[in-house]
Length: 194
Image (cartoon, rainbow, N blue to C red; front, side, top):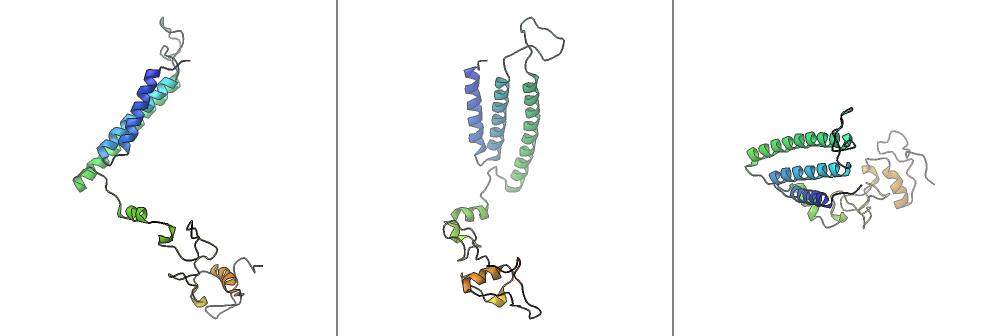
């Protein structure tokens, strides 16, 4: 099987233009990009589907073609067209609603997203404390046993029983017998650590 190079170039141009338009801030351009991308993929499926042939109807012969065309590629393209039109109708409804509310077609930046983008490193994360890894910002074994400034909190203010395991390492003590309410001895979940 040999592929038609001209059709493959058209497929590449359609998909490239579609991706470019999808990355724009205008909802209308996003819709056009979606349609171009869908048409490029449909043309690619048709090209990859094999050589042309007669209609895929059992018992029907054709003087021009000896073989039938691949019905799977045609069915996939038909399904893709229906799905693309449904998504296009949904995006058009979103664009109309956005225009009615904001009287413009552009998608604005979300304030929370811009805060995350401006954050320089993991150390500026809102849930960061001194127990976190300084490079990756991942939580370490220390957990939530620290206050907002990164200092170990007093034992009486612990809210999570698993934080007692961290205190055993930080202060080199055994806090199995500590009871914040004074009712009964407190046991660390999972038993004693060695």
